[in-house]
Image 1 (cartoon, rainbow, N blue to C red):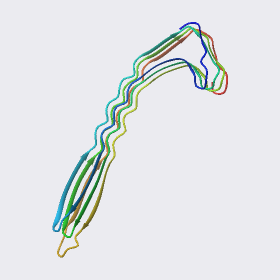
Image 2 (image 1 turned 90 degrees about the vertical axis):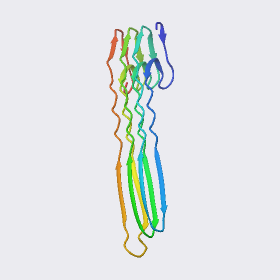
Image 3 (image 1 turned 180 degrees about the vertical axis):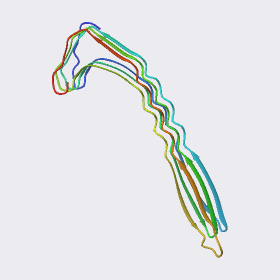
Image 4 (image 1 turned 30 degrees about the vertical axis):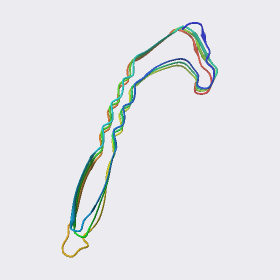
Length: 212
């Protein structure tokens, strides 16, 4: 653009160019509850696996060329903001299992819970800013040119948990009460990479105010 740009208001932006990749979807959670009632004994087996978080989208390239004079008067305003942000991976699904056995005889409970893996964060695109217009900011926290390329974060791993409640062995004679659980949390997703950022400025830049 050419001419002059004078954005108004707290956090105003003169020129904004951004590309943001979509976040991956979250994996499905698994909730299981079993209760066995028996006069002789019981055997229960539970296997639960949380869903895998979805992978995210890529942040695209952002390119801005400006020849206009930009003047801001408000706090935390920005003359030119250019950013590409990769999407974050989806969270892995959680697994929560509750198992109960009520029997005067023996009870055997076997459980396996595996949390879902987090999705992969994707990379951001290149960012390029070419400015030949004067930029003036006149309030605290304001920024003349902000350019960033930020890779997406990896998805959170899913949790896994088992809770067993057994009321067994009250009858005459010998009885067996055996419980075996294997709980494994998921793996967190890998984060995405940032990319090259280029800023070329040939004009005067003047900032004032605290943390400007």
